[in-house]
Image 1 (cartoon, rainbow, N blue to C red):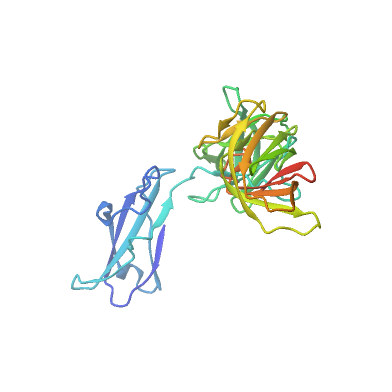
Image 2 (image 1 turned 90 degrees about the vertical axis):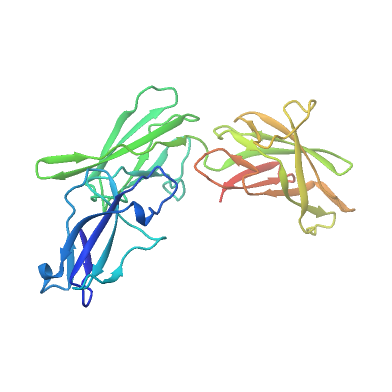
Length: 331
């Protein structure tokens, strides 16, 4: 159903529609793509402040974009709702839901023991609820996990039936019940989550320094995700012998090794090491006189080193040689 305010002097309105192709990157359809589907006369709504039109020639689960032109009695165009960078997008029936992962908060943090998802439906009829499906990596088919009622089109699910270190794939479909009839949407796109530490924990060991080249190791602790290390320029903070902090200086991370013997340049795509494994790294920085590298702290960001949870999660990775530890914190 479309509804809009009556325009002064308007004798009739023309309604235009286009089927929205959600697979295309061009979100706003061109005006030439729309087709006229109806003419609505103002006389039909003589004593109302608004005009309504119900489009009954639609298919369930399909998105449509609309705009409306208003005309005077002498067929003069008075106004239009069309804008090149705006869209009125409607969906008949139930649109496919969308799964997100909050992964944060006192009760909803992903861990080796539990994963948390939220399910919403942003287009179409507000659903009565959702059916959630899951499969583990290596499984061929999804299984039904649960059926949940929705509150304002939204629901949450805390999956505690997971095994540490495993990867899980989630899908959902919406349902709407009216009387004795229940309708269902298409399934959502899959959401991939891993039952691992939400923040990565590591042992960090400073090993040596030669000609401003610092060598150290990182050992990934149990239940971490795969860790990816990329080359880049980060920040290193040195501790002076007297305890004063030196302002951060550039630290250029460049090489890696898995045995501390054979060294290679870190590739652009990064190098991966798993939980329980150790990687050796080298980087260069100007080391001021009187400052001790073994007490330094290296801060990285922009996913230079990160716990590979996926989903576009950005990390602040802090290496503290004085505490022999490192942490990957989701930002």
